[in-house]
Image 1: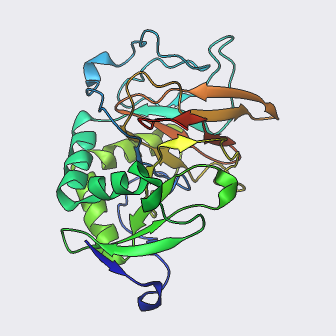
Image 2 (image 1 turned 135 degrees about the vertical axis):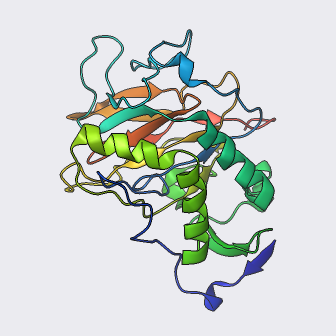
Length: 283
């Protein structure tokens, strides 16, 4: 892979067109506007086939109802204890299994998986908090990697398309492998008029001392969502995502990621990475 200095480029690319469908606005990104895509580390879980839709997973842990949604269902996030709504703009949707398979194959082939693990397998490889760099991967496309500020208290890194060519190439891949249909039924269920995926980001983390509570969007009238797609999880790990009650940040619940199930985070849905340490030698 080739590293390029910041002076050689403008800031990373965020497209505002492409991947349009009949209904709804979604964004792809850092956990900022529709996106996800999270690497954790270590062992990959097996795919959950669509035939499991509507069934619960045993011993999944967490504080929320986590029945696997039927394909085409947009399931509001509710508390496990009383089934009340957690926050108005948080949902779960099932994904076609071919989407995750294609995403993993893409990352393995172009070196993105290798890069993600490079950043977190040793602290010596970490980008400094608040730092950034540009890289050309094996397919010749340009990517932008950054690490959030110290207040995030983790080794989280974000890896995003750095220009239109990379952005378009990745959108084409997910479009051809079922993501367009996912956006269609999100738009249908939420009553949206048009749909654009404009920012894509891969997220990787191996340890987090304390999650930084935040919301990704506000004031969009429920028209912008961050779609989080878990790609690689640690076997036996506790729930990975904190989401708070919509009117009380002190009431926090923990959500366990599930294979082929995306989490939608919209306006004022406060969330954070759960405390975790997936390293071989924690500490």
